[in-house]
Figure 1: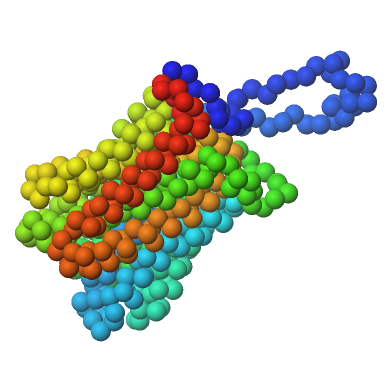
Figure 2 (figure 1 turned 60 degrees about the vertical axis):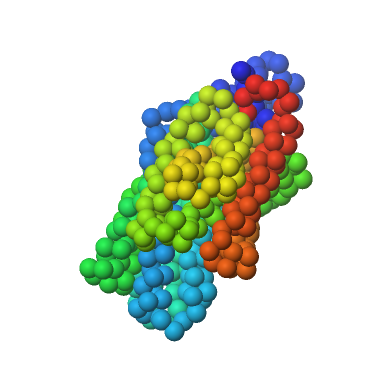
Length: 441
């Protein structure tokens, strides 16, 4: 299988073509001598690239991992501190965290092409950490909305976008693997931070849990930000935001695939633990076990899907993983109500669905080139944000209206449809790029 770059800078050469001076017209010789030689970016697949991956791993582990622990805080807010506050109001604190990370990520993607990403990630560590420290002193829901929700979302977006976009720049042969390892940090963060947060709230307090987490983010992400160097020097452009990509059919299809894929991705993580308790009759601890199974298999899946993506093509792997994720929902979860098939569906979905998160940046880099990656990823954040809005809220409404809180069939079908539409979008994108069956892309 041979791979042909789909954009001029999709594969960046480490050599600059030279033109002999005697081949230039006389009027151009003086100008050619005065011009400095173009800067050659560092080579790909180097040892330093793996240091960048390490920095991105910690950035994603703490930024995304912190958002996944909000359920612990939500329980504390609802049961202890604000029992009279509406659950929907308190839930908006966690919703704002990820939504604002995506919203501000649009602008952060542009900033990454104009400023040093090490400074941006250090600023993100400082702002997100101080946001949690400030939230520890808040005594009302609306103050938590501003600090733990909005302000943290802004700081987290600086860590999130740099963590997503830097690994693909430093690798060519191992691009998908490197990106998968970095994004696996978010899954690992979700595993240990939830347990650590619960332990801190039980043994110390909610306030000290926020303070300690904030200080850890400032210290760890502030230190590892020194590793998060962009491979290319920031360029000065006439257009601050290049919207020409919006007219590209490939981007539109990638956007739709990411939007519907992310929407279908979140629902099982939110509702499978409840299904184990409500439908299967397991105790509440089994809900946590389901989350552990999905997060654990997701970590392995993101790394192994990255290895496969480097061998057969990132888009090919993404398409196959999304298809299997869809089938695990419609073939294993929907028609069966036994514990065995349910846990099999959770494990299979967790393993393959990780590619929906980890391979989108790699596919974007391969199609549009690594130089444009930050701004294109920034625009794709709109897809992730929209995917979040059409994910759990409609699914939860279906569960209440049609399932009366106990019948999950409508929710499961909705999840399968979302993943199916994402698979169709990726299929059309693949056909536009090449109709050859074994083409590596």
